[in-house]
Length: 405
Figure 1 (cartoon, rainbow, N blue to C red):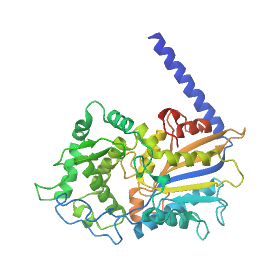
Figure 2: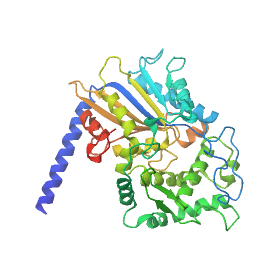
Figure 3: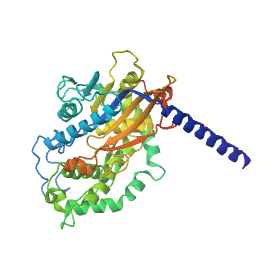
Figure 4: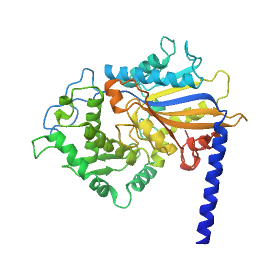
């Protein structure tokens, strides 16, 4: 008992010293660089029909753009969040009140929705400026945003399966699904309406398809279908559709927020476990680490990387970050939501990394409300909110995980 007490006291002293050191560093900090890792904006389902026949009792609503493309509404919301980021960067001294950012680099993945999101973000953060949206030709694979197991990306299937098993816990996928019974019934009510049988997502038990040499582990069955359906309902609402078109008029805002837990749960099992997170985020982690290390006078002071929800979720898992944007479930990457890393220099010359999650609320995306977006400062696992640069870099390149970014 005495040993435990001594350990607790020592840990408490360590945390107090870390907090005091961070508080002292906080005074006189200079913002040197910002790195934004952002999910694309609002899009329709990525295929038509949105889901297999029989999942919903009624036809899915129509969208004005090709499946998977950024909508005009989504683009406008991204412009708005870019304007908010510009104002925030001006307060930090990275952007002058008039004119263009002095040194900014933006890279988008090669899907239409990410390219168009990058263009819209530049309209907001750097209006009228000639900053290039760097990207590969539309549809060409970009290794920077590629998840593990896709198109030859490095991948250890045995370690991936072990990571999923650990995330599942002793009860396995059956216990996870049982814990979602209430939400599954809630979702089926929206999908099926008055139709009582032969409809919905919960008819098929959830299972984990193990990883192989060329494929990542994945969900099949109820929780997989639920994640897709819940995200579609959320995107319908975020895009400003009339409520009679959001879940066929059977979904409330409270439903949409509660059901987004399915989307977050899928990442909890398949993208956030440490090995999978590191494998998925390795190319982005290398780019981020290089940007944090670069002390050249010509180095970009603003780096924006426009990708997907998997990119954001995996980076969050790699760094041990947790967030909750208004209107979304905990750790659910919102459309246009971003992990932002700030490189800060203290008066004595020591550098720190501060991480935050920035997102418009679900209502802001839907209505373009002019209030500032949600921002919350996060802590990298094992580090105070002001994390010394060397410790942040270690977390971005953990050699003991066997991932070489």
